[in-house]
Image 1 (cartoon, rainbow, N blue to C red):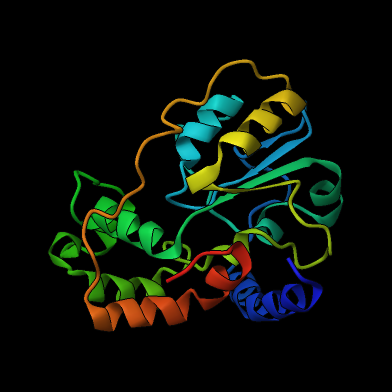
Image 2: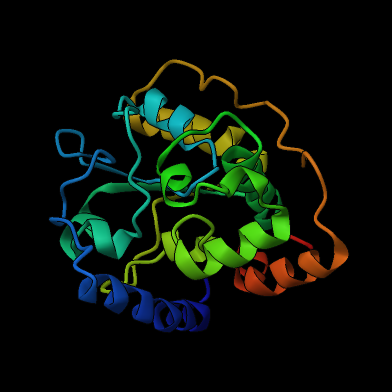
Length: 216
């Protein structure tokens, strides 16, 4: 990530961090199912980016999920000292995957309690309501790749679409011999957003497209 863009990303994220602090959503730093202190490992769980498969492969807990941004999860010392891993994905594919998971699958988690009509939402309503009320559900992915107290980038910033080489390198660093299951599964879109929504998504995820080399 270029230095100027890193600073821009940090400034854009500060308000979200402050909102979480005001709402008392800050959990104890350095305590997360995504952190393995014995191996000095921190997996940042960007939603809908093969996170559960990767956590299982890494030997981390998969009975729940922690999708907090790095600054909300660990302090600067841990961020800089541990092996940090985050996966990103084509922004529109990721959004569509999130929509299908929450609105078109047998998902019955917390959002269905909070929003009883969730399964009736179309893509446009899902985008608008989640964007406003549940920012962690569809947050821009660059927010998972920066720590507001550090200039250090993640040790492994992996694009889901061409992850094989990075996964092999990560396996060597961590001494994991097994193959990640499902790595070669298609990440194709299940349906396409309408043109007006696609324009909104392209604008909302503009920095993701720019930083991670994706095209709309």
